Image 1 (cartoon, one colour):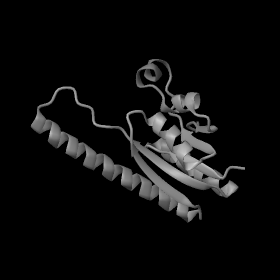
Image 2: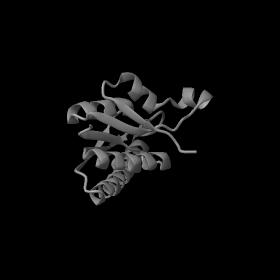
Image 3: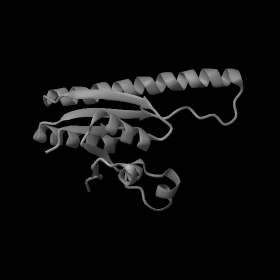
Image 4: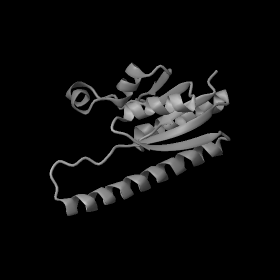
Length: 148
């Protein structure tokens, strides 16, 4: 049914659970997977130029290292299941848009991702990347929620 599944992940426990379930789904369909992580740019409000340069470099190094580790571990899980897997690390102001763009550019026919299920003020203040993907994507989206 599905031939290419995009699996966005942020390394959280819920995202890791969705990754495992998405890889199993891909195995069931014999689908290829692209595993995506989105790095949000460093934001500055008030720093001196020397402090800014050091902080920016430290931030970029740390984010890059975490993303590479996350993607390598996810790709290893996919390979263990015999899946064709590509990993993708992108930097974008809006993670939801990076997910939609990656899906379109890679020709994915399903996006499978976690939802943290925030409600009330937490949802208003923090927003929901999953909700934005659901609202704006033309690719079907499968949402995994925390199992109770």
